[in-house]
Image 1 (tube, rainbow, N blue to C red):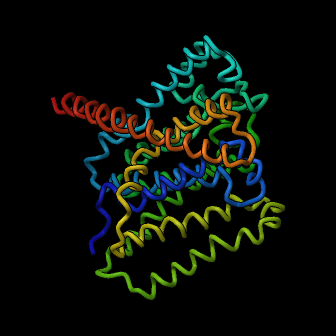
Image 2: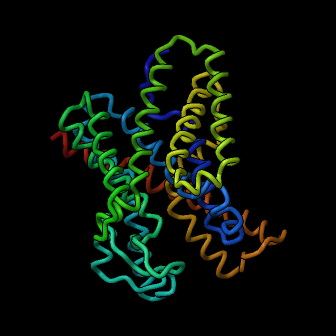
Image 3: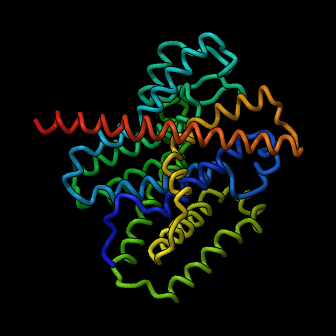
Length: 354
């Protein structure tokens, strides 16, 4: 078995699917009140799972030093087209119906949203929050920031890029943990999201651990069984001690360990030869589109169908809303992320090769 060189590991698409689905469930008023604050498996845990996977794939996809030149362009082509399209659409819709966002964004807020500059604004479910016009785009802002610092790290040293960007990220996490910043920019990237930087580092660590396993001709069954047993324990035990974890504000640190074991376990399953169902891979491919799009479907469903209490009717309607979200997301993925993204990449390559 050689070291990791694949651009995509199918089992990781299952993680993306699970994370995106769980985040969307938290956005339903039907479910959220019954799980938020009562379990270590909160919405932030599943969002941070995306950051872990990003750290993993960013290191894996840049093993070739030639990738350094086009890294940021490829990342921006992957992240920004759908986000920008949704930002423009939401901005113009909010000019007509401000109640969509809970406020009427101005042109400067549009520019800040497009270029990932955090600002405080009103929201339907809060008096004030640091969010772009597309509310869930706050995670994309973290992805863009991490990508920029990763590009800087590669510029300094391709060989030590992972170590350098991890040093950046840990410094940001420590600053955000010890200092309560008031400036919206620093507050967002350091104070509010301090733990997110650690999940990027966790993904990098996952890559090097799995890469070592991949160098072996065959992963010993006893080692896999031991790791699997540890993963089950790490995922289950924290819930039994949730009150203590919450009281001492340890949830972010415990979730780091949980995510480490879970991600490596899923990848090891892939390395042991297990096949991820094709439909899960397809949904995982569309998870980014789903993440950005589903909240709009949820909002419309809750507003017009009043899905706000447990009943057979509301559970069915919620399931229908989720299916519709995945259908729209896959269409978006196919047209914008796949076709349009590939076209942009080809145009960039033509210009870069001149």
